[in-house]
Image 1 (cartoon, rainbow, N blue to C red):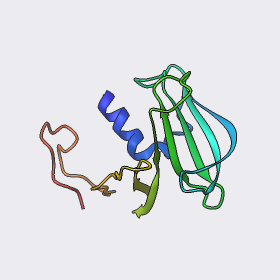
Image 2 (cartoon, rainbow, N blue to C red; image 1 turned 90 degrees about the vertical axis):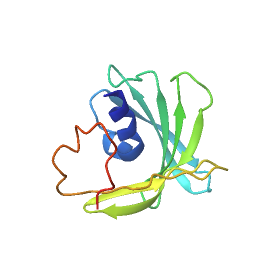
Image 3 (spheres, rainbow, N blue to C red; image 1 turned 180 degrees about the vertical axis):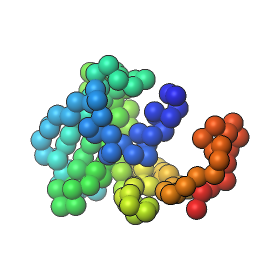
Length: 135
């Protein structure tokens, strides 16, 4: 279960902003690593998840209204993030708009093999072996 919770945040975090136990706080205006004007949201957790001591800062582009960057703080009290990454390269997957880009300032990174299938093969969610990419 902890792997699912962690990995789901890496894929669908914008859809989890209103989960029970999530607290969002507006921190003001800022700029993304790419210089875009953004609103900064702080995301903290209360009695939820496997790492409730974490904190995130989410930078929402003021033109597109999409999260374009996130910063991860292992402890909510940390002054500096452990990392700051882009959250970009949005693409439609069926009815979902998902971002694949997770670049740091100097290190490219992305989520590949994103699929939004309407049906999945029998047993795929209980398989102990990796499965082929869904199309």
